[in-house]
Length: 489
Image (cartoon, rainbow, N blue to C red):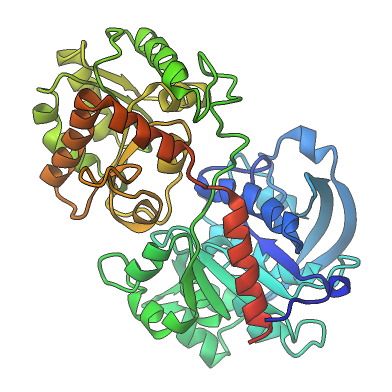
């Protein structure tokens, strides 16, 4: 396949609602803050467009420069829109400004979210007429917050010469959240009630489903791991969208996310007791383990396996499995520490175990960046038995710090962790296939046994995990190949 000549460098507009360090509520912000820079380093011109939310730190707002003002048509409305820009770490960012929609205390959770998101999607397209020196070949949209961009492009802009050749990619980060709103928005907000294709492809019973629209209208569909791309074609994982993925499987692919190797590095982490790397972990890990045990009030014993969970405490994360085997697991000579917040029933359960087994269990029902670093650096094993996991970052971060993940083989967990093979002494973690508590228990006991009885094999396992490549460079190359295939079929 022939690359575009340098003078016609590949241009991609990356539309997303979150991008660290500007806006982040979860993993979407990690992707938005990392992938564009990696793509630019591989030779493409990827620029990011996102809303100018009130929660963006003032240090960045002060650096923004306004480049345009215009109005955005939204059904019968005509709304003000400003476009501001700044450049950071080689990436150009554009911010859609409208205080009525975006000057609010949090990014989501309002009664007019359907209208706010529709405005943002329409503004993304309108802004292309006002951004100088940039004409995207591809608009890459992410999750339901940008799902209307491909819909509006096809329905209302393709007749305009400047838009006719633009292609769209839509990435599913978490299929559970689809942007489902009352059906009247189709006409009153989107202005699409007179288009039969739009009515057919956006309607979801009596409602309108934004993500469903993107799944039909986009030229290519991606998700954040190869295994999740296969799983969402089934009823178990498909969240009522499996038939669409089956129908469009020829344009569906999965590309595993990466992590920021500079940020997640035990060799430079400012929060841990002693820095280390894949060559010095035998010295550094025990120091950090002892420091974490002391901080948590646990016995400082290097021979006792320290198991951690660093997670949102929700059903998706496999907490029911953990609680189902916890009493049996705690009969072993080990320690367990949990860091995270979430559903009250899970928080209460871990607090209960801490109260009855204070010498073995610590429940840190909070989220603290510094403490998460200490958990990653000081632990021996990380539990991540998710019911589903589109990609997952914790297992990658843990491996970077030499903490061995125990995962359910689903989605990105399956794609990023190779189960340990005791006969060949290979692999970089422990896994189990079925959503079953006793399979989880067996996998954890495998890890505990190896830690206790074969330290040389354990150390080799840690070294393999720490040297694994989870950089965004690998992912960026795959995305560029996808864009080029889309433009040069």
